[in-house]
Image (cartoon, rainbow, N blue to C red; front, side, top):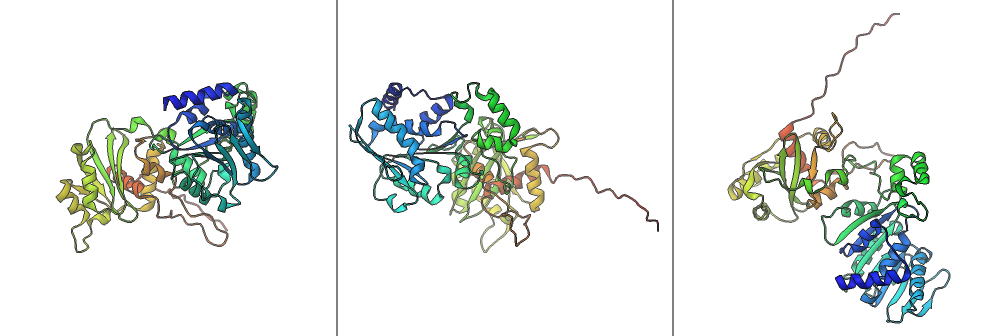
Length: 433
């Protein structure tokens, strides 16, 4: 890795590429899949092209894939220009609006592909792929590209600007922007990183004028490279930069378990520490198609297991289906006594909201360790139904992508109860005829 990075930096120096700190963080990340969300004119095309150029000596075949051939052209021309500067071009074909191909003197081949011709996204196994304007690609194309790099254990670099902060691109950004995964990471490159356009950086007068003109969330989406929370998201208050971090890891105190049993969906167990009025989720066990005994065995292997003092489970954990109940299984195999209560849906959601943002002071009372990948992903997936012109909008969220969230709600409701709402005041009035 050190020698590869040194070779890359040497190639960059020869063509005058000096990445900004945000760009370098993305380049230096060892994850095979990287999603780079950039603001408008943030230099996404050049940074993607330089990622490929810096790795030309590592493989033989590279793809540039966009919604159309024209949308791959900026990256292709950056790569071509860099190769010309070091006299590395053996042959090149770049017609105005169709497939381009560059072959280097070392035999590496760089080819553009279009999502409009999905049949061409097969047969070959690239060493690396640039997804150009990736936010405009269908999810089916992303999945196909992920499959293409599997054979050669290649890399995938996806760059684009959020298109309304909806769809798979925004969802993957929210899921990957934290360091909880080793295979996929997401990065933001704001527009003001482009010092050629905005010499003052974040404090540039033009950026300040844009910020004063655009609504705050739209400004951050278009120029900050940060997606807006969709209006259908149940917990729009959840912000990974606020609620997720190393402060969520274990402090060595007593642990309680928050459990939502399941099978095909997931069996979710959260390890929770109460720290005065605040709460930290320090770890999760999130298994699919596993029974309680398997889940308990997985929990026993975690370092916090000796500190477990009890826990809370879904009220359905009391039920017997010609077998011991979940509560009885945890007591027999784990020696853990579990509590359970009926939690009204709306009351549970409201209780969790008070920990995401305390209504009294506006601060977060919940922290989550980065290792709790599934809980973090659920906060970005758990949603209400979309608005419809023919049906009334349902206030009940879609019962999906919420296993760990439900476990957390059960525990918070058990410990802190429902929110006390002030009684409605009756205002007397008199009608005079």
